[in-house]
Amino acid sequence: MHVRFTLQIFAVALLVSTTAARAGILRVYPGESIQAAIDAANPGDTILVEPGEYYEDAGSIYGLRITTDNLRLIGKSKNSHSHPSDKAGQMSNRVRLIANGAQETGVYVAPAGCEYKNSACAEELQGFYLRGFSVEGYPANGIQTRWVNGFQFVRNVSVNNLNNGIYPTLSANGLVRDNISYGSLDTAMWVAGSENIRVIGNELFGSVIGFEITVSNQVLASHNKIYDNTVGIGLFHPNGAGNPPLPVMENWVIEHNHIYDNNRPNDAPDGSFQADLPPGAGVLLMGVSNHVVGKNRVANNGFVGIGILGWCSATTGTDNSCETRPPISDPAANDNQISLNTLNGNGESPPGGILDFLAADLVYFQLEVTVGAGNCFKNNKPEGLTFVSSAPNGELPSDNC
Image (cartoon, rainbow, N blue to C red; front, side, top):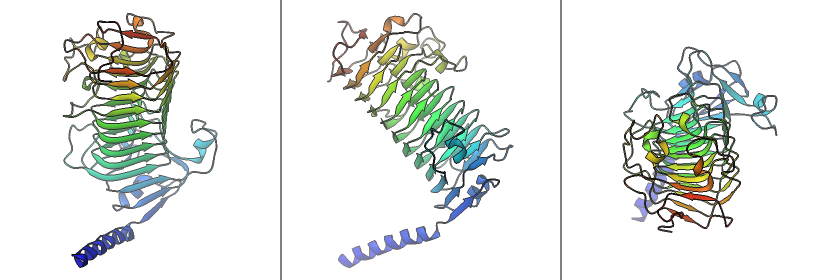
């Protein structure tokens, strides 16, 4: 037994050593094509890109298209202490991938044949790492995965990518850390149809929605800075997404984030779900269940600090009402826990309209036929927070606390 175990360890070590030995490093300099290096790479290779502006094939739908397993794409940068939104500062010292010609999405990572408008993919791409890129000015998405198992986006910047900035979709086992995203007419960062995703230490601002989750399972969002959006964080029912519901859509944990000054006028395209969102919301849970919002700082959002709403209640009178678009899953919000958050200055400047009566630090509002149950508002600070509740007793629910 001991000899067999030793041989197994040796075999694994040999395999790891052989794989590492096969991995190569490719280098790209300004004036050269990053896509050409991607096409030449083998699984496990690393591509190092020198700082500069890169305009890839104007006839492609993508800036960069990755179909190779376990590729590492690293943008080198020169030292700079300025904010990445300062184009005269750090932006000139980064790798800048800039929209060109017919391109729609900046960095698109998915198996070969699995394009971003397809409804299904035959297989998964295994592994991808992206660091140090600024992706700018794409009319659809900035950085997107689709059917990728195991990915990391670290220290990238998404600038004015008009649909979604950073967009892990239909993927699993991902880390999105220390990125900056701004200037999107939908969402600065959206986790959709995905599982086991960690979103840590990002800065999300200047968009319709700062951070969004739909149709996903096991998502952690922690230590993010989210400000100057129409809605800071949106946790939305499957009707608000382009993906059908999953069998399990639970355990979205929103904790230790700073969510403030989300009062940006809504400039989403007319007819979209996002266009119906009123400005001034910190965190909205709309028709979703079994999630936790805790230990966050939520301040100076003019309409709602943190709100739990039934999907049909929230969309009444809009183009996305349940009468117009019947819910594809239960529209009630159940078993959510809102606890240990610090709130101040929310609800003091509502946008004007029929929902202004909801303006408060904490809101519970659902009139669904399947009335929500198990929601818990507990130990939010300071005492005496303003609140609105549709519960029969007029109090915030404290079930299952």
